[in-house]
Length: 447
Image (cartoon, rainbow, N blue to C red; front, side):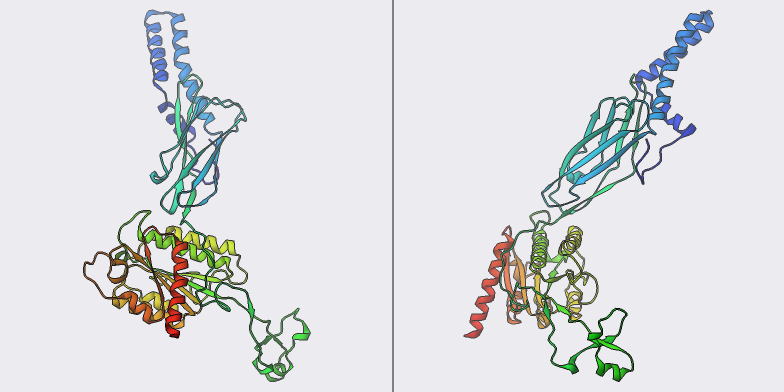
């Protein structure tokens, strides 16, 4: 087989023929044994006609092995995913294509593609005799209830000669990757604070310039408009200076995802952690669509994008590309072994302006106070806490049978909007509930 780029080269020469002879079927070995036996009998009995029959019987499986050995170097394959990125529980279709690039027809071909067990059983196909220069295409569907990145391949191909004397199984080395991202729910527009001129507007604003003394000049660059030359700065610095272009400002949103293993109970598609991951994906996508610059932050302090206060979706980055980057990150995010949220708090100190949306696991009072201090630099803060129906989501860490105090109360006193999310509830429902909670807290403060 002529493998696709990156495939393992097939064995050639003497090693290849040794492998081909090892692939003789029961029929091929029987013909070879009968030919040898006929040759021995012809030699003992002096029968030339029997010797010819023996040579024919022995030559047929050997010629079949040679034919399969030559043919297997001249078969190519390719795989195409449609699409290569799917949400949880959605189906993707895998298209396989096999080309016979030799001048000889192939025998019966059997295909088997390797897939992880979470995607279902391994698909198998039987292809009829393929003519010289022929092509065959097959496809199968896969789906997963668990997010992640799953390798597909390598493709295994079994070649057989037309007489069924020899069969060889070879694998192409090329693999493809299927990315299963969290489910994203459409969210209604609500007003949560922290946005430009209220929530949800997300339009760019120009920074106001109070006067000539407030202008931030920079050095002249070839091609700059001479009408932008700032003469006062030019005289001060002794070189040609121009006014900076007005810098666009976008409303920012940070989504904090608590991934601590000790903060969640259970596992699997219906667990509280998976709900939090799906909720974070929904909020990030919603904010991008509303024109916000967004950032994903975890309890370990890792950020997307990394470093500082930069956000995905800033000027120059497309919304679709930003969403793909975030979804790819959430597709593989897992539990951390950390016990606290202090590293996330330190990361927010480097740039936590704008709206802060936190998907938290179970909190004790100490961790609740750490989260409460994150509110100081945020324009608005909303926390979603899991609710297992017994108060565990708010008042004690998972697995701890003792009440650890009112974590929700600590957050509310610090100015957070706290929403408890019962298991299985739609994200759109708790998203609207957050707006009502915020409005109720504002009315209570006015009174």
